Image (cartoon, rainbow, N blue to C red):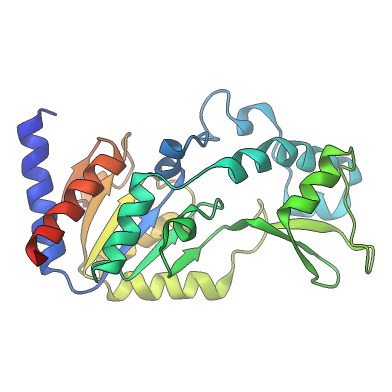
Length: 257
């Protein structure tokens, strides 16, 4: 895509933002790669080097839990080192100027909140905390990581001896129904949806953008690769999310100058 064509698409995106009253964003792992986080589905990523342990296996098998926590021992420090990039910060700025109602994310890294977005719906939970599956006691993830580093790959609650698990959604574990309901409610009432960095292949989360389209919203996709739902988008960008969003924010801020 040449620069002129990209500039024209940015201008069209700015027009959509200007005319929209209820705007939401849907994000996946691709928005955080510019923060140095791996795309865990890519060759060489964590998912290609570790077997995925289901929630049921986590509950029933000590061996499965040790495999699960071995992967987490590698993943957690990377997530904790990450910092918001230009795309995260631009979304927070859009909220500040009244042009972003909420961010719905598949990510567990907490970077939207770190950037300043105040309404973030985490469909797959968060890596920032862990909880006892028995009594519900919760910890920041850092002391759990310390146990992993010390070789304890099956950490237990010191109050009830229950299993400890990060507050993320595992394969076979139920999605947070209240968060999902709020996300679909937003999709049904927004008039512009911005999708960034998702393959749109993991369901039920991937059903949110087409739900917005079904209810009449315009769609803008910013994604390096093709998705099965590209045909629904009014505008498609393959460029850097940070660069595109900064250009959109600058255009909207010029309106207020």
